[in-house]
Amino acid sequence: MLRLEDIRLRLGRFRLAIDALHIGPGEYRVLLGPTGTGKTVLLETIAGLHTPDRGRILLHGREITTTVPEQRNLGVVYQEYALFPHLTVFDNIAFGLRMGGERGREMKKKVGAMADFLGISRLLARRPGNLSGGERQRVALARALVLRPHLLLLDEPLSALDHITRDRLRRELQRIHRQFGITILHITHDLDEAFFLADRMAVVRNGILLQEGTPEAISRQPATRFVAGLMGLKNFIPARVAAGGAIAVQDLGHLDPGLLASPPPYPMEDILLTFPSWTVELEPDPADHALWWQGTARIRDVRRNDSQVEVELARGRSITLHATLSRREAGRLSSMPGPGREVRIGIGREGLHWLPPGDE
Image (cartoon, rainbow, N blue to C red):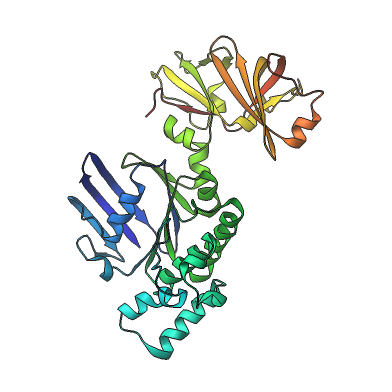
């Protein structure tokens, strides 16, 4: 459906450098990255608002690198909605149809059908200033979808919404994708959003694509520490690979390299061992064979939210460990130790992964 090849673009000090990005028909692709990393520039380059200095953009096999935006048949929905404040909801949705020469009964039929689909028919006579954030976002989606675009581009479409509205619109986007079968490229910095919606995900940093894959695959085997941190991993422990492949983990002893999905190549020496915080158990069963390590650590901090308890632990002089417990798991502890207390802990075998040292 969409192919980017050897894209290079300079805007002031910022550089976009995408060697290859391929999105299949009907795919829901999410670009994940922190704010200011170039995701919107990439989306606007696909939309035709920026012309790359080098490279090609192909849509359905047709090159559109220099094609003007209005001839690309792409739908774009921005974070700030970009609705016309002086037009009614009906006229906002109909705007693109009118620009394409449609009038009369057929146009009204298309607008009405899209408004019904998105549950905003009662709003057609209102203006954007009288709508909630969620309603404005639905109008923006209707305006893009009524044109039946080849590709729908979503620029942080949920970030300006409250938690409840954001959850509703996530499900709305999922429904749109399933019922229309439309190809979607969605950019966000929200990991939960990416996991909920994406068929495949691409991680972007400073205009460079770092890793592609399903959310689950990237979460299990991030390519760099930056990607691992973006995927929510917090445990990073220095380790060394000895001759023969044995792995010595700082302050934790030795790890059997066979427990890793892909052991580090020798003669690589310094690595980082990483694992999810939910694999760190407090007061584990001493006979639990699902754990690769057991020992003690000192609690530094305990933080609670509505569904989890996060515990920060110190092991030795320089190792910090993070454990995430469900409320049920925390309730099963003999007591919830406070900061400064020693506690028995274990680290599970599941999710063990190694990274090259450093940030990249």
